[in-house]
Length: 263
Image 1 (tube, rainbow, N blue to C red):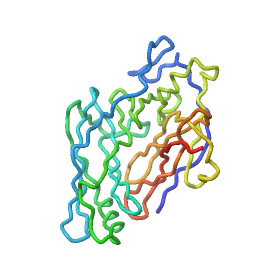
Image 2: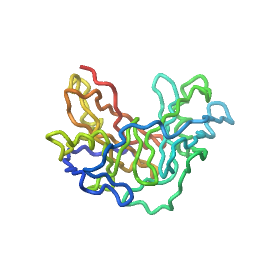
Image 3: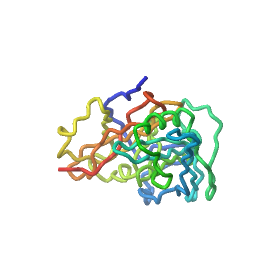
Image 4: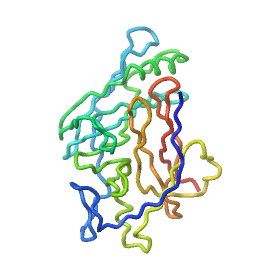
């Protein structure tokens, strides 16, 4: 059954005097809020195994933690090329959200691990690739970081650091928004979530946004997906774009990605 993420608008009041997390805080006296950071993960290799013609037996993505912090949760998207590219999610660890009771597993700095696609994902790939004349070679598969959450609950997403929202255990705020506290609107972050159900490319053309953070929402196979939320900004340089994350045939969730703003 196909799952669709709800669409809503919300207002989150953010004051830097609030402590963002017991082990990670930012205050009004903070000299500098780290906003950008290098990618915390290096993809060492992707391996697609086929024991039978046009049948996917396994998909493995080997990664290394190249940051200086331990990683608690990591989602990698392996994109298989084609007329309609297929994005396959593989994950490590557990996200630090209110409903999680999983044992914490950490990927230490410098450590390597192999993320393995589930059986359901392999079945989905076999079905989706059935129309192709041949299975793409492993070196044609592009693996990118969707999100990485560190042990101190700070997070990396799309080249920017994010910090826990003190008002929601599911939401992380972009460091660039926290750094805007010198603005007259400093005490509020306005965010609108988008989904494919209400997204119309023609209506958003010419409207630019900036990302103000992201929120985790349950998807399929116990996977938590990251959804960016945005603020309309004439000086912004991005727009929301609907994407799809699938765990098996017909078992998909919509996610929200970003693209350059087209005016």
